[in-house]
Length: 129
Image (cartoon, rainbow, N blue to C red; front, side):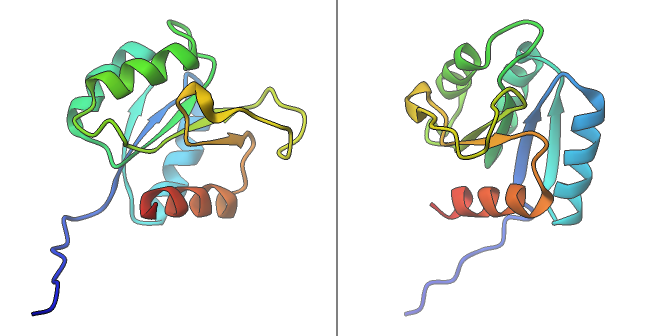
């Protein structure tokens, strides 16, 4: 008997960034690629939106109400899927190949501005992992 995977619709991504222009740009990239996008401008909203069970989270490291390192722990604690991929977004690293420690709870780091192809590749890699 063959395995049949039921299509559950588009994958849902929670995008957390306090900059509305960055959220708009990334949302357009993601929606064009067929993803459903939930947006949060801060940590408090992000924690509430985790109830929507996103398939992946894209999270800025600097938010107005919480640090990214504290938020990732809270998101994992409230998620129905504690292994949901959470990718950090930061504009404060000098080079994309800078050494970076993923022990902070993130699956990967993306340096802003992130090219659309790099963003989508990271998302697909982490969704399929």
